[in-house]
Length: 226
Image 1: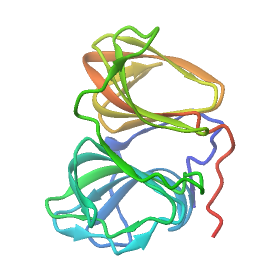
Image 2: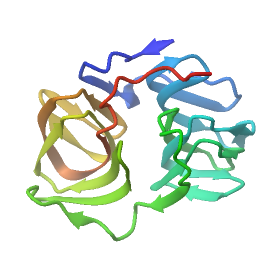
Image 3: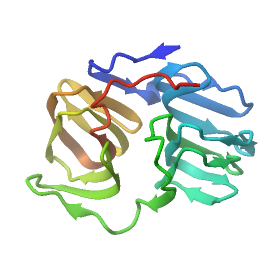
């Protein structure tokens, strides 16, 4: 399966406007944003767990990162409330689920295969710092290595934000919204910019909180080697 698999094109999905589709596990539905592969895939999705639902135990051969959008995600490593960012690198395993239900944004098979740095970060607290040359923008760095930078940012109402993507970029709206080009991006809207892109976003009247990944599309993505 290929979905939004041409990474040379600007891609937008307003996820709140597309239907949920069932996963192979009862009670777990998803909205696919991009995908290369079938059930074992390089994939970016928004996944919804019904109350009391669980996925079967599995190992993340290609790594997994996720951001909890709503509710509380749970596994044997703990409880992860909304606003938590988690990285489960290759070779890690768990049995995910949610007693109260939850929604997560998740990326699979997108890790450096030598990465073994497993951690979680609460993005609701302090630690946001002003960004040089970007008035009205504060940033919390979540992860940075030779291949990518991951952060959450707060953009004040009306802030004009340059999105410079020499090696690609993804932006997911966590709250509030922004305008870019002729489009309005609301909660759960997702923008992927190809290498060499540059555009400007303007935060809405209530400002916005966004998740951003930069520099990770320097090389064309491929399906998992299984």
